[in-house]
Image 1 (tube, rainbow, N blue to C red):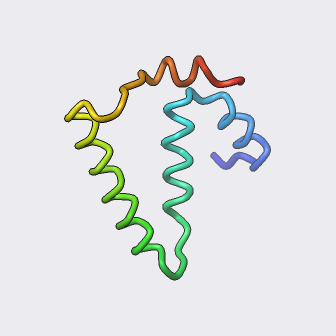
Image 2: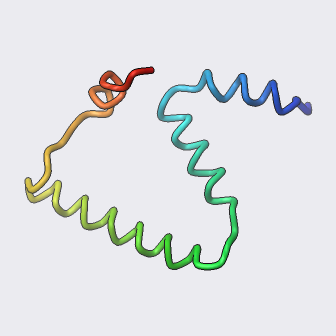
Image 3: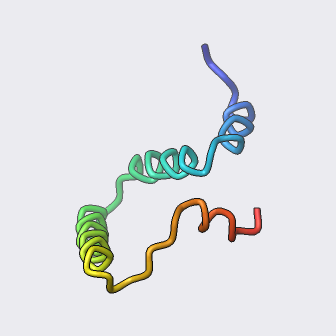
Length: 73
């Protein structure tokens, strides 16, 4: 079944916040450009640093529910 891009957009905006984030990640990952590997590597390092800081109590943990509740959506 093939759907139009307008139908796809309508479906996408009705996804849960987590599903939207996953979709955005998939779409952004589909772009290929010069320097992408370096950017991905730097983001991976940043993610590991943040995880380590969280484990060590150096940053405040906020639940996903609280984050989305605070957004003006």
